[in-house]
Amino acid sequence: MLSNYINKILRTLNIIIIFRNGNAIGEIVYLTSLINCLYSENSKYKIIILTKYPEIFFYNRKIFINLRIYNNFFYRLIFFIFFRISGTNIVDFNPEKNQLENDTNFLKNYPVNTHLALVVRKFKLNLKSNFIKNEFFFSNQEIITFEKKMLLPTEYAVTHSQAKLTYAKNKDWGYKNMQKVINLTPEIKWIQVGLSSEPLLENSIHRLNVSLRELAYIIFRSKFVLTLEGLYNHLSSCFDKKTFIILSGMLPAAASYYKNNITISKFEDLDCAPCYRLNNCVKSEKFCTTRITPEYVANMINKYF
Image 1: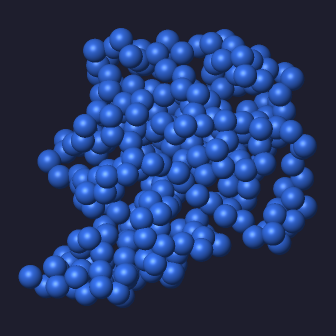
Image 2: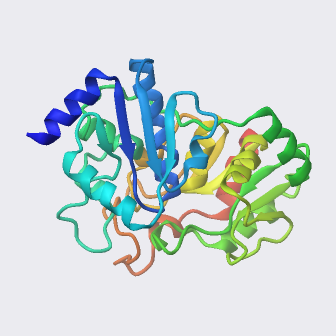
């Protein structure tokens, strides 16, 4: 079989090609955990990466070649070929989504204790390691540039106003709840990240529409992060940054858990959770998030800071 033959040749050359199409930035951030795992197993691997966000991998010495994917015929042809010859050394980092109903997250296909970062590692590559550590690197000059440009306070916390609603509305907690947490913690300097099209939080410093690397630096410099499930949680893992993560009942708690997390959830006793539904809650109200109050979140933060 051609696929086996090509992958075998690459294996003898210690070459691994990993490709990920799509715009889910968080998923590409936790691809760094797979790279970390592969390099730990064999530092001689020549790892080639193809994604839409190569800036995530800048200055990562574990990567041999870092390529940007463009939406043109050439790259569509490459992906067409790669999909058909993928295997142990040509790795498709897209999760299997076969036989899923509409409005359903792909994790429904996997055991309830599966972390997002382990799906490809365990179920496509059959790697045994459960070690999860995302990575993000800066150059010394970059740090100097960002520090001058961003004008960040000496000490601050990072938050955002809402989830990525274009993907999964069920993850959202509501910007008014985030606002109340800020109001209940006036001693904390808050920086809001995200997009200017999202609701603006009062009593916070706005650093919106920044580049991906600037966003990572804001998180890197922060004291802690308050976030919903998604990109900011995956980025925080890169720096072992203390992260208060507010979980909906959409996914199991294990799906987004990193060792730097302090999990805030109220869905464990609900028979509807995890529901794996992206947008349409079938209950009279979304109990998994409405039972989490701003006072409860503020008290959790105050226990640690």
